[in-house]
Length: 440
Image (cartoon, rainbow, N blue to C red; front, side, top):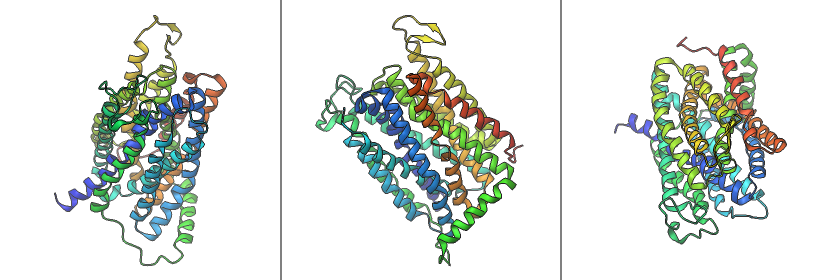
């Protein structure tokens, strides 16, 4: 493998290493376990989870563009990635202490939020390296392949969890055995091991990234770098109104990515609370979603190259709107007001189909969004641009989880609590009208 190929593979290995935090912790294993077993009340658990996610979003909105601007001014990105990786690992390992029915969950939520913040901030710097991976016309395909690789990694680790570690209500894994290594099913140690396992996975598979991906050299003059970084960041923000396409894209992505985060963060919680699925059942749902994500994100990379990222984003958002409406209209005993036969498997089957739709559209949406940002940004301030992208994705990051938490609390209905994300998707879709690409 030549140095060029190693560079690309090393960069793509970040997605392979980091994706399990999303797949296993945020969506399919830990979040449902947290609400159903650690808190013990799915409605209260969903509300607390929403508050934690909102706090992480507000923090990221502040730190993302500032750290990106400083990195562009000083040069190297890897020192930042080491620091954020440490946060990722600390947060993931902290999941181990989330025992069933614990008196206070505040410490667990803080640790988890730290890990989530580390993952999100690391993406700012890794994404900013995408323009260095190839020619502009190939970036959509490279980015799509990286996202697909990440989903495959998340799926593989999810299989390991379900087959050998995560226990159902009877204390058995998907293979019908007790968790490996003598882990205590009554204390849910098999399920809780998802945190340390995710941290170990990240540590091992980030090695190729740090070895093979070249870093930006330190700028000749770094004196007063922080002051210059702030000055240039504010100058960039002041120029945004003069760049209608870039500004519209940042605001559009702010809404639709916030909505997608809401779908990811509460999909497993919804399945646990509304459909009464076990962790193992939710894991199977995750496998179906992950397989669809890997396949369609890979295909989406080629569609991105052929039709442009705006086309991929538009189709993906439309699919997600339909999926969310189906979820809102479905409960254990009815479908949009039509009463279902007792014990009907229709809600379960429909939610599995929706899971595939979430995986396929969500993966393609995130990959195409990364390419779109590269096409809209100033190449000399690319890390700052991805910092602004993080700000755009998090300036309203409190909105989806907070609205979900609020509507869930007011209605005391998890199904209706998901409804705000449809509005956020629609706003993001409308704002795409003013975004221009070379494919138009």
